[in-house]
Length: 436
Image 1 (spheres, rainbow, N blue to C red):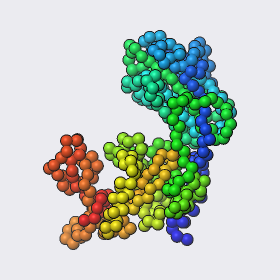
Image 2 (cartoon, rainbow, N blue to C red):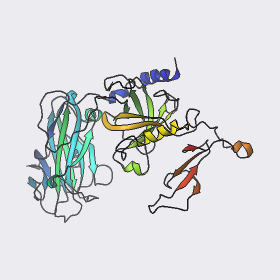
Image 3 (cartoon, rainbow, N blue to C red):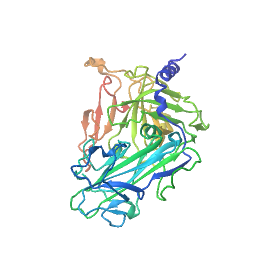
Image 4 (cartoon, helix red, strand yellow):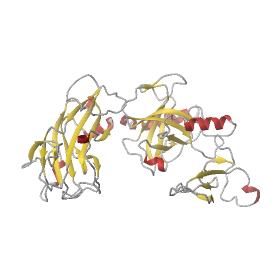
C-alpha cells in the first residue's frame, strides 16, 4: 500500500466524526421565518434593563409590542421611537417545525448605525459596535452606517451553514434578538430592520415567502472541475495562525462530471489552513495556504494530489481580480512548457464548511523540493567557499511581504510599500520564488 493511500485511510478512521460538520444537503427553496414587519417586543433600554434580555427564557414584562422596523419615523419604520434614542432592543419568537429540514439560514440586517444579533442567546452577527460581549445600553456605534433598503439597495447579509444552524436552532420555539445603536445621541435618523430566512430541503411550505430583493447563495451540485471540500467545523479561517481542518477532493478524471454525492477519491485527510495574501486579503474572495498533516495533526505529511510530486504545502488561490480566472494558470503552464519549473495548477470548485465559495486554483507552493525547485538545501552551517554554490530562490516583491531584503531598487512607485525589491533566503529558511 502506498503512503498516500495509507495516510487517507488512517486520517479517515481518526477524523470521521469531524466530517459530520459538513452537510451536502441541497436547498430546494428558501422561506422567510422572521420579517422586519413581524410583531416584535421592544424597549428603549436604560440602566435597569436586565442583561439577560437575549435569553430565550427571558420574559419581557413591561416591554412594548410593535411592527418593525424601528426608528424615528423617517419613511422605513413601522414603529416610531422617541427622538434622541441611542439604542433599541427588540426580540421575537418563531417556531421551527423540523430542524432536519433546514439546510442553511440567512440573516439580513438593515440598520443605522451599529447592531448585534443573537439567536437563542448566542451572538450570530455584529457590526459597528466595538468590544466583546453585550455592549452597554448607551454605547454609541463606532461607525456611520446608513440603512440600505429605503434607498433601493440591499441590506447586509449573513449566511449560516447547516452545521451552524444545527448548533444554534432547535425544534420548536426559537428567539431572535436584535440590539441596534445610533452613532450619536442627537442623530436625526435611526433604523433597525431584521429578516431571518431559512433554506428548506424539500418541497414543503412552512414559513413565508422571501422578500423580492433577497439574493440567495449559489449551491454546488455537480461540476466538470474537481471539487475541493474544506471543513474547519465552522471556525473562521484567520490570516494566522493556521487552524485545523479536513479536506476532501472529488475528482473523477478529465472530462468526467464530479458530484457532491461522489466519494473523496482524489484526497481525504487532515489539514492546517490559513488565509494568505497582502492586498488581496481585503478582497471578498480569500486565498488560502494549507498544509496536509498526518494522523498527528502537529506533523506535516507529504501526499500526492492530481498525480503531482508528493509534498505538504499547497495553495488555494482566489482569482478574484482575474475575471477570466486563467491568467496565473496560463502563465505557469507556459513556464513549464518552456522547460523551467513553475507551480502546477488545477482549477477547482471549493466548498467551505458546507458553503460554495467559488472557482479557485489549487496549486503548488514555491519551495525547495526535488519535485518542485530541485536545488540543494542550504544549511545554516554552509557559510564559506563551495558550500555556498548552487541554486537560490529569489522573489521580486513589494516591501510589505516580509523576508530578508537582498537588494532594494532605487526606483519606487508613488504607492506606499510598493518599492521593487529582491528578497532571498537560505533554503534552510523559507524559500521564495525562482531558481537562479
